[in-house]
Length: 107
Image (cartoon, rainbow, N blue to C red; front, side, top):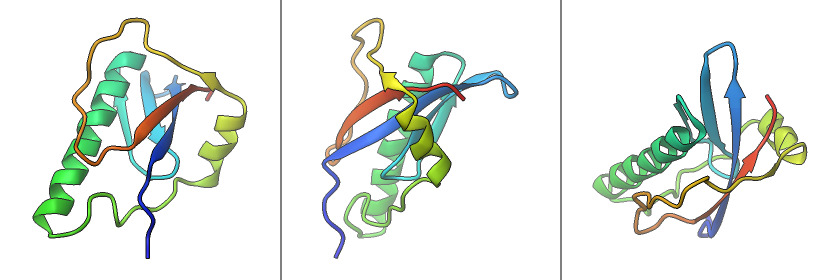
């Protein structure tokens, strides 16, 4: 049985080749991108909301079919530092969304 995910670590990094920022979940292999760090974070929350909605429509516990991200993202975590948004705009959160810790890392 899968335990409830209470905290999700997210690595935030710039992908120079793609020209965007990526927010990559670790305990849950979900990611989103954006032109700025903040837009990647907003898009990450939107992706989580969609995942929750799809799970509920399929009559599953939200986020119950999660898998961890590839190991290379955990390695990025060790080289990163905690990130807080430069402004405190609220983001849409889901009912089942875990607490999220963002880590800024070099790609």
